[in-house]
Length: 152
Image (cartoon, rainbow, N blue to C red; front, top):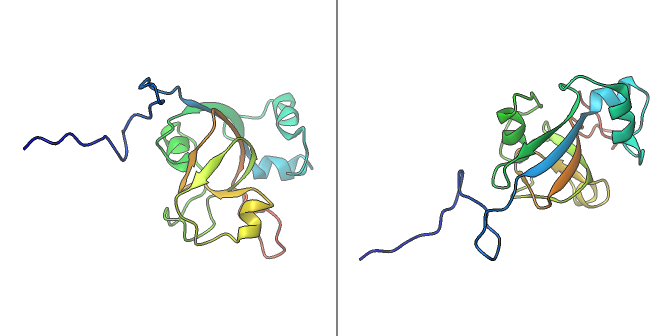
């Protein structure tokens, strides 16, 4: 009995309803450390424009193309970026990022409150996958006790 199963898991191609492969996602990233060093706020509407004007190194700011089927953290690592991580299972908040634009969904979340996700747009990059064609994220923004992004 031959049964053809759909491709799932790592390496599976994401396809549109018409069967065509979907293009990669463009992720623009910014380090929370660069935000703090420059006296900016994560709340700034022009945060990524400020970062572009500063000509920060690729370690702190840049754009990469990522696979729709991979987590944001894994995609960053595949592009030789070093983002904070620890558990890789959505149970700590070391890999937290602020989602400034676009959509990214978490497969699991045991570390962030509903308020942090819904109102402050925090995501755990180890379990988040892109849901839109473009994303802007501030990485290494783990929440601190006062409820504000922090980390480094």
